[in-house]
Image (cartoon, rainbow, N blue to C red; front, side, top):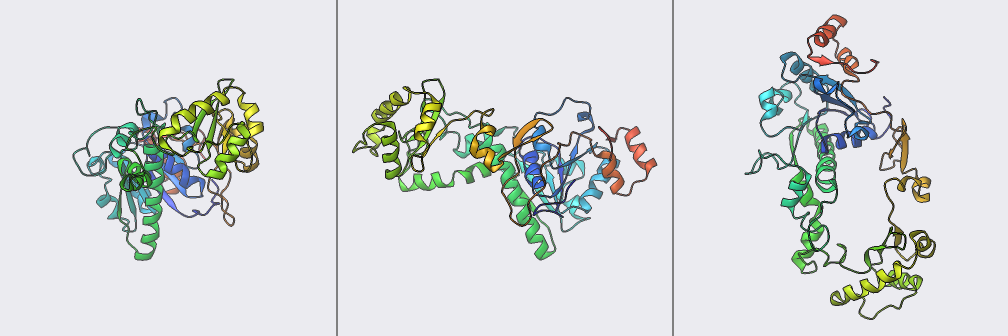
Length: 383
């Protein structure tokens, strides 16, 4: 695996899980960090996981963390790591013997991150949940969707933005501080907290009285006729984001409609939406794209997942790449001095088990015994 990228030399050990952990591992691995994921032995024979793209830029070792020998391997890996990610509910890692005190006793510089839904304390700490539950408590779900009902915005706000991305921020912040102080710390990352953080601007606007606490009633939630999507003649959609007056004037000119004097009056938004909706239905998305994509109209075709990689802007930027026949987002952001290597094939459970054990100094017989006893599992070619 290439060591190119701004995070070359950073080592992260991560317990296997879904959602935010793998996403964080992909982000860090994309940028050059060495990320080792500890998967369960039983996953080796399972069908390919649904999060396969997010397993790129990492290596996988399949270990039984409940077995003392598997636990010792985790301790040895953590001793060499800059950071460790615990993806269990509060208290589980301690019961397994891989809690922060256990691992930091051998590596005081270790940054130990705990990735959960509700955090390490509070009345919900031990509850099971998913993205939709966490963003429900942060206010994010209430603010998203049409007026009739909240609609989950995929699992972007909880799992990936409020979870995995802030997990990456927490890990890197802890690593920077440990480099200065010589001592690591525990980082408590909760998807509930993170999704609330992502809503900071809206809480600020609510306090100022410039945000209405209901859906489709505000500038950027689909309420304004100049910031929403419209259906076109072919059943596709166009997005307009003409917030500023001059952009709105350009949009109207291109649409062939007059700029109403009350265009920014909340009470008039619905009637103006009807006018614009009727106009958009007169042409196809492709026809509107030829007419509306100008420097100041702030209008864009709404592309499907299948269409987006082929758009000229995405092609020019190299926004998407193809790995083993799978089209996927390229690493981001971009770096002028330390560009990361192109992503390689994802690591399925146990793909690098033998390699990782050998790197720890275990001889052939010791590795063979771990494999024979089911404490470790290897999948795919070693090396």
